[in-house]
Amino acid sequence: MDAGLFQQTAHSPSYFELARRLGDGGRQLVDFCIPCNPYFPTPEMFDELSRNLEAVLKFYPSDADTIAAQLARVLGLNPATMAMSNGSTELITWMDHLWFTESVAIPIPTFGRWTDQPMETGKRVDMFPLREIDGFRLNVDHYLRFIRARRSKVAVLCNPNNPDGGYLPRREVIRFMDELADLDLVVIDESFIDFVDAERDPSVAMDAAIRPNVVVLKSLGKNFGLHGIRFGYLVANPGLAGTMRRTLPKWNLNSLAETVVYMLAEHGAEYRESLRLLARDRYTMGMHLAQLPELTVYSSQANFLLVKLSAAIDGTELRDYLISRHQLFIRECGNKLGMSNRFVRLVVRPQQDVARLVSAMHAYSHPQWEDELALRRNAARSA
Ligand SMILES: Cc1ncc(COP(=O)(O)O)c(C=O)c1O
Image (cartoon, rainbow, N blue to C red; front, side, top):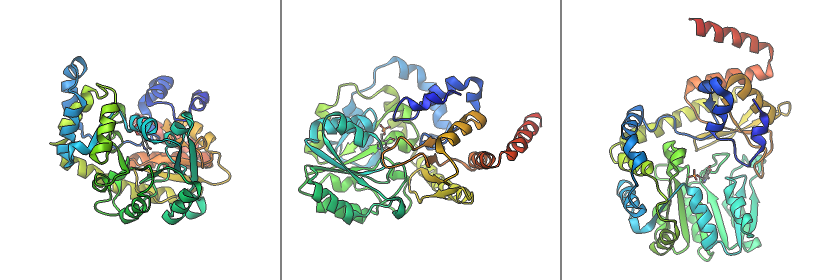
């Protein structure tokens, strides 16, 4: 496995790229890197999609307004307050072009596009460091003071945050928006909010729709575990949402996205069940990982866990070892601002995958365990 593949960009190599490199070994690949929802869509939904594949690939989708109107019906939102996009990254790009005039405040570490996009267009990025000593928890008062001191024009808050999964209760987010009612824009990135189980209605989307300067961003790809489709949306007051809709390129949504949006109306129960199972897995995975003395696991409300490695372990070496020896793909965080290669992000996965990861981590720290694992693998294969 060519480790150089990991050094090429700020992001991880794609699943497809890795599977091509691994050849036959790619079939065994377990992805702890890309935050999918392992329980949704259900196998029955995938069968339905497969049956429709020919039409999906052959025919043009409906326009974005038609697809967004259906999504609004399913979510119980007013379509005038929404704009739908080819992944939420498309909206980050356009928000920067339209509304980020001078400077943007953002806690770090976070999703790379929040710092890279405005920097690429010459804006000042005011980075507010989340501290390891605080478990990367955001203190709203400290962040507000920082925004005022820097005179930032726009403020962003990811809730839950990536890569740590840190979550700010809804009332704190409301207070944050209230305090910043005079800013050009406040963006609440709720790409991972559906995975929260700390409170019943964590989203502030409805509140954004009635405020002059707030945008809430959502990534359906993240919630539904369908990153490949590329669909996200924003919720804001009709003026802001309308400006975004008029700005987005025509035909920016594809037929697969349209098909899935229309399927959602019938599969709400399965989706809710997938979130319940995921929250259960997050809890058990956190417990299993925390038992390894080499790891510190941070509390998360997203579908991934941030883990700190003991000083004896280099995250880059661990990542290369896990992929080449065990076909386990993890996110080493050394190339994220505010992180180092002592941190890795592990996507929440079902228990049998976690057992495989825990054994492989153990083998990394205790090389004699590697032989035992190989024996077990051979025995399982010949059984
Ligand atoms: C916090 C956050 N916002 C937005 C995105 C972009 O998601 P999408 O796949 O919808 O472009 C990501 C992707 O990792 C993310 O972590």
